[in-house]
Amino acid sequence: KNEVEQSPQNLTAQEGEFITINCSYSVGISALHWLQQHPGGGIVSLFMLSSGKKKHGRLIATINIQEKHSSLHITASHPRDSAVYICAVNRSGSGSRLTFGEGTQLTVNP
Amino acid sequence: NAGVMQNPRHLVRRRGQEARLRCSPMKGHSHVYWYRQLPEEGLKFMVYLQKENIIDESGMPKERFSAEFPKEGPSILRIQQVVRGDSAAYFCASSRQGAFDNEQFFGPGTRLTVL
Image (cartoon, rainbow over the protein chains, first blue to last red):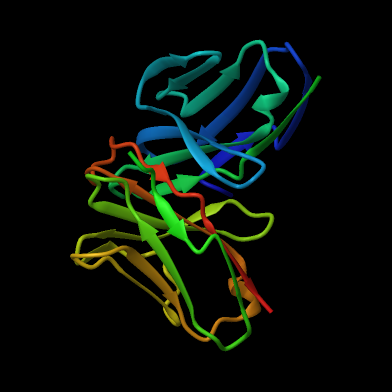
């Protein structure tokens, strides 16, 4: 079983829909990251959080440390949001190396 | 302010050849991480380096793979005697410091194809 699990693996939405991607982890962590991998392969860091909630534009990330769960929300989704979204954690005691989930492939149709 | 640079972006090698992948971190960053993404798989940590030091190489295969980050110049990931199973995307990331709460910035990746 992976230490970082994401759901769903694949998600198709219509433009304008509210989207939620979930991430659960089974290890102690010091921080959690949400990354976006574009169709061309490049990776962009969206959020890094260790508690609470962060918002950037139409993106919102939340984390519940007690439940070992994080969610990434996209409001008013757009076709340009189509990408793979990856959850990654800094495991406690492992310093700054990242452990990744398998990713969620999001497709937003016009 | 240039981001993390990796070259080449695409590299084709025949079995048994050597592959050298380069990563130049963002300006002001002295910590470099290498990750590998095998086809249809997630990203996996390989190695974490500071200038002239390997901090954590627990994700590196024991044979054929090595990494360095010299005082001057880019970080190099070297794969000797490549095999087909080495075909993957190799990503480099850098951070200003090595603490867990420092954001990592990723390069565009090098896609290695072994024929």
